[in-house]
Image (tube, rainbow, N blue to C red; front, top):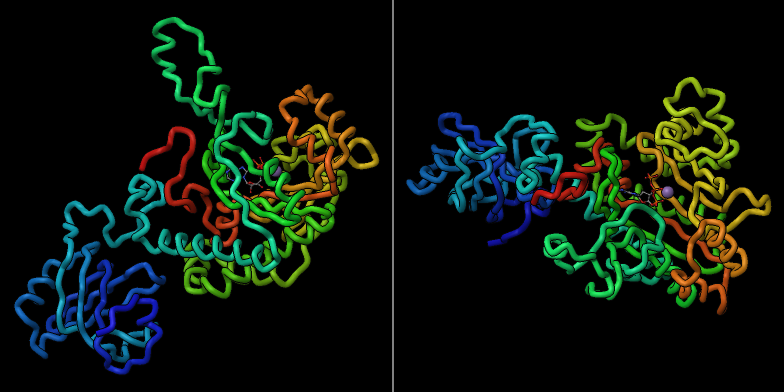
Amino acid sequence: MDTILIKDMLALDADSRSVVVRGWVRTKRDSKNLVFLEVNDGSCFRSIQLAFDRTKGLSADTEAALERAATGSSVEATGSLVSSPAAGQSVEVAAAGLSVIGDAPAESYPLQKKKHSFEFLREIGHLRARTNTFGAVARVRSRLSFSIHEFFQKRNFQYLHTPLITASDAEGAGAMFQVTTLDLDALAKAGKPVDYSKDFFGKRSYLTVSGQLEAETYATALSRVYTFGPTFRAENSNTTRHLAEFWMVEPEVAFARLEDNMALAEDFLKHLFSCALADCREDLEFFDARIQNGIIANLESVVASKFAHMTYTDAVKELEKSAGAFEFKPYWGCDLQSEHEKFLTEKVAGGPVIVTDYPKEIKSFYMKLNDDGKTVRAMDVLVPRLGEIIGGSEREEHLDLLRTRLAELGLKEEDYWWYLDLRRFGTVPHSGFGLGLERLILYVTGMANIRDVIPYPRAVGQAEF
Ligand code: ATP
Ligand code: MN
């Protein structure tokens, strides 16, 4: 007797073979001589239908199990795979036996067969993967993660693990979480000052906000590397696009210029969209029908067209023409707000747009200065609905220019001694970018809130589960 996942079962011919179905009951319909159970095991979007025919004689145990098999209960059923008269499925199981493995009492199981709000489902994060939406998000997330590795591995990038704990606050990409083993309560009670030389690492340490600086050290040895792992930012803003813990992908490429970096980012996103379209079809069809109408056609058209390019200076000119439409008035030198980013991609470009050459004042110290002395070779990839999905740059490879930038920003050279060494020994032009995995999933699924595309979101005031 085959014990296979429902995904594989649904792809078989209705050849009356014996099957064992294991999963969780979604619905039960009892109509006199026939009882139907929809059973889902999360292996794919669809459930399999089990039809129990009383006229064929069901055992007393099976009758008792049918009585208990409520929404959410786990079951094991045996039967044979037959063609289904019901619409939308080619096969179903003519079921003979059923046992309930674990009950889910209707009066206490929170996930009854009705539409629950995403807010409510966040409160039962440990159960929400059993819903259509969160099952689909989890599968898309898994597939895209695999596709990320696939893309880089095929292009001879080495997968690099950068540290999650860092003892320098030199990364400069956002507010950091401190890591300590000092008993701060006890020190406070005793009225003693905090002495970080007594801390675990002998100095203050933090959770990483980016693996980029370390990735640069390996890119200037292995040529092409990428990181893919958790990243932490103490973002104190309550937006639908920011998490305190998120997964970031950061390729870093030696000998690559900004133009190469832009092309890599575009190829990368298109590869990921194509994979989702090809391999997550059922899940995307659900998102298209229920979450964001037209998402499939949109992804298809993005894959087929070229991303627009625009300099920051031109972007600001476009924004100034419609300045009245914004809460924050745009001007040359301003950090682009999310409303500006959305306008550029939705109204000006009508699709993804790569904005380049930002003023040095609003970008990080390591970005390569342009000849104008005012702008840096930065690039942000903006997409409709979200704004920034990728941020990257060509890195400054000249020691003297990098030191000048550190000095201008009041940053201490000794904090960057190893980073500066890369420019002292065998320096090369190099570039890279960061993609937030959750932003990617938001874009592909059409989900509206970043807290709904990671299993257990970490945000201000939120660390349950
Ligand atoms: P934003 O301006 O949107 O806050 P950022 O410019 O601070 O982003 P980068 O430092 O460029 O972000 O990080 C690279 C990528 O990581 C971003 O393009 C985005 O996809 C993702 N990202 C950044 N911060 C977060 C966050 N708090 N939660 C989820 N993803 C994030
Ligand atoms: Mn950015």
